[in-house]
Amino acid sequence: MQRGVGAWFAIAAAVAAVATGCGSTLVRSGTKAPPTTAPPEVSVGGDVALDDDVAVTTTAPSPARSSGGANATVTTLPAVQIPATQPPRGTAPSRPTAGPGGAPLARHESGFAVWLIVRPGTKLSVNDGMDMELGYVNESDRSLFLDGNQRTHFVLYRSDGPDKWTAVWSDTYCDGTAEAPKDREPFPAIEVPPDGEASEFRSSLVPARCKLGPGSYLLQGFIEWCPELEEVAACDREKVTPVRSLPVDITLTA
Picture 1 (cartoon, rainbow, N blue to C red):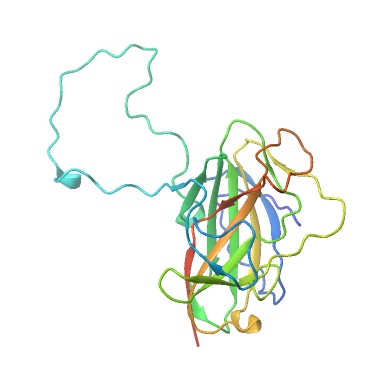
Picture 2 (tube, rainbow, N blue to C red):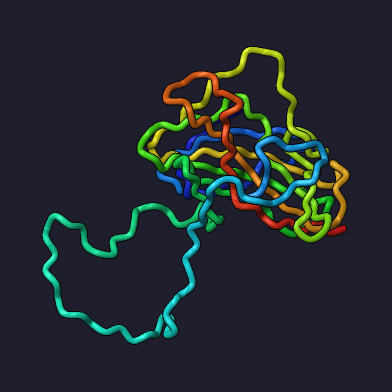
């Protein structure tokens, strides 16, 4: 894994050349930063039900609930004395409402916020290259920890009918499988401090090279949180919790 520095809001103007292999690269950005569906363990070509098992909320603005919408008439109420010790009413939290480039942002109960960016777009030929970036930031007031043994960060699902999706690709293997655990001493957890500094995992794909044909797909990224840790140590794999991005619709054409 590599680490790089730069403001998380500064989106890279050029993306690395498309690779045929699998794997993802970790990059650290510099300043403030900002499925729903996939199971924590990806089955080989198995059917995947898109049911949430992690509390995830988006930060997209809710539609106006008043019948008048933005042009509704507002009645001014009499002034009220507010004690100086109370914050002004209606003060919004100083948290970003979207990821870089307006990418949909998912917030997790752990304190992580995650987003997924696909370049150059979500509709492309099977012979075109697709670059993906899974970004995350710790918005809590304490250090959080990620499993240092996680190798799969992106999974692509093919639509096989209404609400039926099959894992067909991952950034570890072309057929959608996750990397099997190795018989070795586990790596320690990765500490993510509460400093608002964003990090990204990156990968790329040329669909035809992995024998993916035209059709409708969903791409999702995830990181693995170690909820029991308060300091750097090995994660308990039985307690590791996936923190998933919102899925992105991908359309592949001939």
